[in-house]
Amino acid sequence: GENVEQHPSTLSVQEGDSAVIKCTYSDSASNYFPWYKQELGKRPQLIIDIRSNVGEKKDQRIAVTLNKTAKHFSLHITETQPEDSAVYFCAALTGTASKLTFGTGTRLQVTL
Amino acid sequence: DSGVTQTPKHLITATGQRVTLRCSPRSGDLSVYWYQQSLDQGLQFLIQYYNGEERAKGNILERFSAQQFPDLHSELNLSSLELGDSALYFCASSGRQGVTYEQYFGPGTRLTVT
Image (cartoon, rainbow over all chains, first blue to last red; front, side):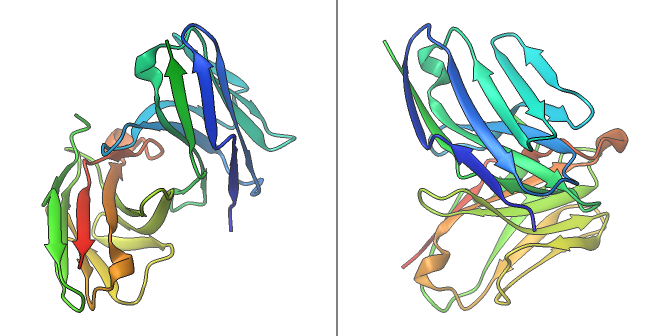
């Protein structure tokens, strides 16, 4: 089955700096890659996603890039703010059942 | 607010008991997914239903079962509960207007088994 690896597990940046989180996936048939943000005790919230026919997608301060050949995708957050502090999960979708396989999460802390 | 609702918010029960978690998907969504998130763990896919039928199974224990009703709400039944079943249980939904990829999560049910 699909396996998604996510790095780093923790990331601390200063406010205003950029943050990058990287994921790799194993199943070349995966065709959809969402990113979720989860604050403590709350639901995972979809923040951005990318499909396999696109290399990059941007939404204000966040962007996602996909390298299908290398089977990896990354989340980029620019001009980080304290409210960006949360756990971020990447995921890959495979199969007709729309099954999402999640990475293990990255705890991002934005310090003042 | 994602539009997905889950009840109850919190559940405390003893080992060996059985509980039922309920999920109502976003209006128009046909698919419901159940996930388990243990303390400091990632999200583990349990099971998916599409328009009343089971579509995919993940790492769901035999003690767990689910169903989706004609009104598209879903229930996750957990029986013979063990301490290790303590976790956050999320449901998610998708499938509105033919868009099947994006999954939106409910607020979760926190289950504590004592």
